[in-house]
Image (cartoon, rainbow, N blue to C red):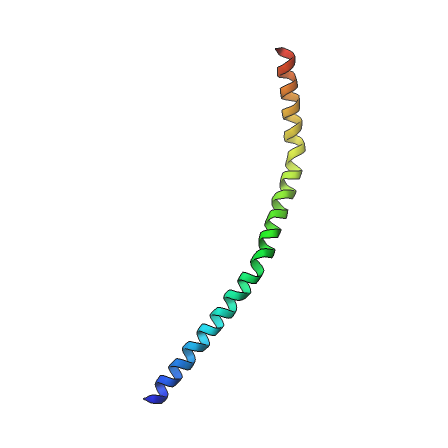
Length: 67
């Protein structure tokens, strides 16, 4: 019975150790993932902004000429 308790404690501590190791690995990667996401958003906005800005500039210029 005593060996059963000891084996259970060792197994539990092993599982907890592995979970902590995995969580630490994920948290270590999180800043890189966030930085990559920001680069993607920035690139997407850079690709989309010239067309949008051109429409806004043309639209506002036409509105000013009409007034």
